[in-house]
Image 1: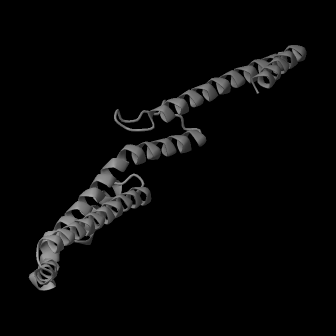
Image 2: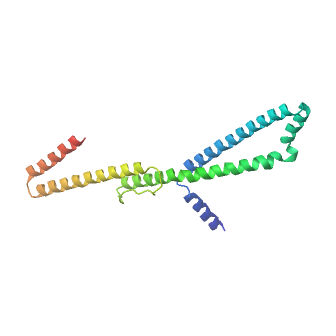
Image 3: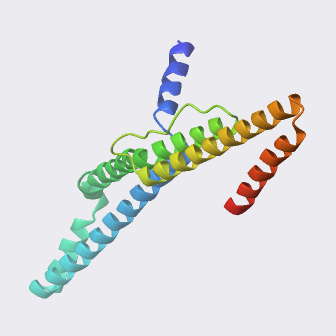
Length: 188
């Protein structure tokens, strides 16, 4: 039984790329929606109260306005709070789904950088077709390709210099190394 619960928790965790970011954004979006809904309700209440006060006698207006927010009739519980909870939940879900387009690429880019930093180059970074940050992935791929080319060139230079040193051609080895150093200085 506990194994099944742990598996469900793990599946839930895997559905988030960056739980802190996505939950924070979803809650932020739901909070904005909640605030807007309350503000809209307050403005509607003010409008209705002005309309009622201007169109009926004061005593009747007071009875109508008191009746609108009467907690005994559960008006606020079902007709206002239920749509508020539904809308807030909907906005939270939209926030989570919306962040997948940013959190997914950020997760993939971070993983790619960490792998490349440790020397494991698995090829260019590829994001999903509809993900955001495609331009960042493209720039990162270009940078890594350039670094790989420089690394290959530097290794080739060292191998050439080593071969010349092993063959007793010290001057040629120094010439190769000096040429590479000059290229590196010009590039910097």
